[in-house]
Image (tube, rainbow, N blue to C red):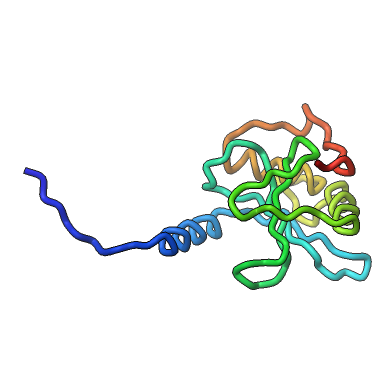
Length: 148
């Protein structure tokens, strides 16, 4: 005979908070997009545990607020946005120029003993998290100036 136990009530906000905590614990920080005066304008992450198997990066404003003013996603392998959930922001022309320059530059972090471009680092993090072998050596970095 199966016994049911009442463990409490949840509402959708509780579930969203739990999901946000899981994402926070599994995300990898790729780096910070900065102006020439070293002001950070965007943070780039690869999230784990999203259940998505389409390689993409999350780009967020650096504010510490729960709801940031910029919250968008960019495909790693194609110059396209990947809007899902509340991640729907798109770059203005200045942000796009800074993002492109950032993705081409060498990361400050080493990955497996090598310095990679930030695009290669995002790809390496995606592969590490999802076991989804999207190899940068097989695919060139997309031309993000053609973002759709």
